[in-house]
Length: 176
Figure 1: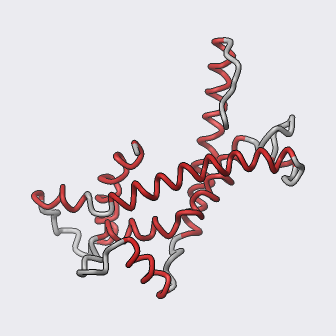
Figure 2: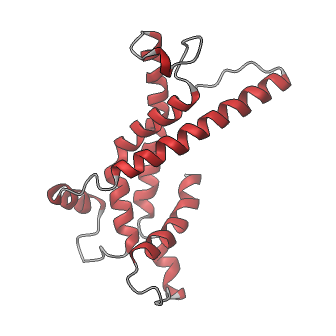
């Protein structure tokens, strides 16, 4: 939810600038608030699925590692789970695959190019995207970005978490 509250307005401006044909056209201040909320429901729904599925995939990865289904090169030295980079990259990519069609709909809604009456609802856009074959548009660049950013973030997270746990003499009991 917190991620969505930051993401909704910033993505609105990013996406509008990306799809704006005339860069000299200014966004009308009186309409910015209303327009920036366009796509907010799908963003919150997508982020809920994204985070929940990320946690599920982390848990599943632990089970797969402990049962020997994951190559050891992707695992920690003690084979208790995925290495931090692999955990962040693989689990986040699986989470993105779970909800990517909703990301496409979110971007379409925030672009302002899909405001035709009766054709802007989440289900209507999902159906239209499925029929037109754009349900997974942008997936490869999105997964590359996700691999790099989430893999790197998990390395930093694990380092900070381990360092602080050692510093304060706390035993790690987290799920990741």
